[in-house]
Length: 251
Image 1 (cartoon, helix red, strand yellow):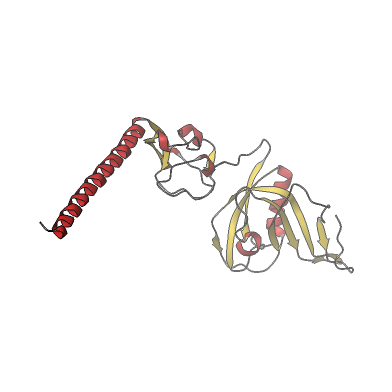
Image 2 (tube, rainbow, N blue to C red):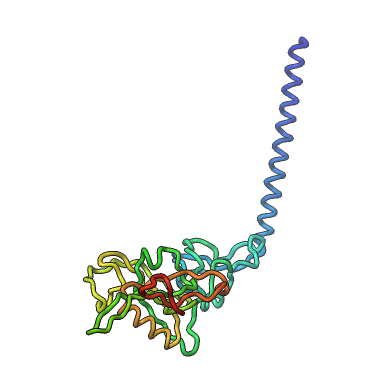
């Protein structure tokens, strides 16, 4: 056997030894992974898994979820584990089917306080809501009234802040409104003649519910304004009316 042949045989032996070493290493790694998996599967815990899509701010009912078991090693304290935890909860955002429920996905459902009335009105989807008012938003409600004349008495056109810092408890789906004629006595006069409107629900005391009903019935337009901060830096105007000195308003 010449030197070249001896080198070839030696390289083949080294390659075989290396292959055996790699094989043993892979087998050991697979065994370790399997042992870890077996150990994890040994301790299981029950969590709730969504089995149908849940829209944002809609109740998460028992029929929308199922109890499933996963390895305890993969779970955290944030997982929702009991059906009782869904009581009085709504989805904080859209939850897709198959997702495991966690605490951050749920919000407390709005509830009526003693003496409150739940009342809904239709608001212009573009100028009144514009997609930014959602469940739980704090808003001011403004109404604008046209000037009127009854005999010699003339009432000025006014913009009025009828409600201050009230909470929206539900924003419905956009609806196409039928074509309506002009005129203050139209019940839907605060909506565009042809366009989209959104039902917005409030929880109000009896006086504020009456103000809102009046505005929806007789105002030319009702608008919502999102409110930021705990309080206003200075008291805002509650009313601005058309007068000879335009631009001055009273509180």
